[in-house]
Length: 224
Image (cartoon, rainbow, N blue to C red; front, side):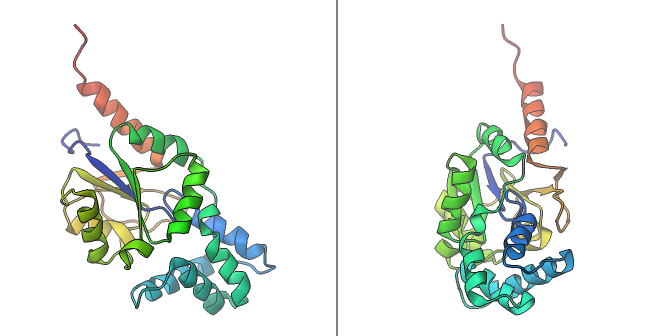
């Protein structure tokens, strides 16, 4: 990481796929119904979700339900239960500790295509509240729509710029839009990801915390 990168004043995070292991979580939930979710079908499901997210607003619970019915043929009631509990899908092993460490550097805010209820579920797993949870249900639009980013900027009182670091495993949902706004983009190499250009590339959130803590230690004044 270049020492010339700006000091972060804010971290925003994609949640599903970056903090939460949505592929493993969705796969286990689907298998619990007696069906299956091959990797190729997972991409078909999330692409179906992306198409629905670009239309008239509906909750992420509803979009998840409909994508599982349409792509996998799940019964609607089983698919709805999966959508309702999506925030209970497992965290990546590094997420809890890394977010705690990064929160000592700058506020950590979720910026997520999800519902309020999912925020409660995810933060219960973390064991602490993030600085804020800004979700599609509140702003009534989904990433990568520019209106989502404008809503977050207005809510947090911070204009888009390099001191705002956005962290994601997905270029299509997150990093391409963030780069156009001049944010510092961090690509996280999760097992399922969609790479793109980024100022920082890390294997996981712990590696991002390591990089920033080392940089802070290198520039800290010596004690007299």
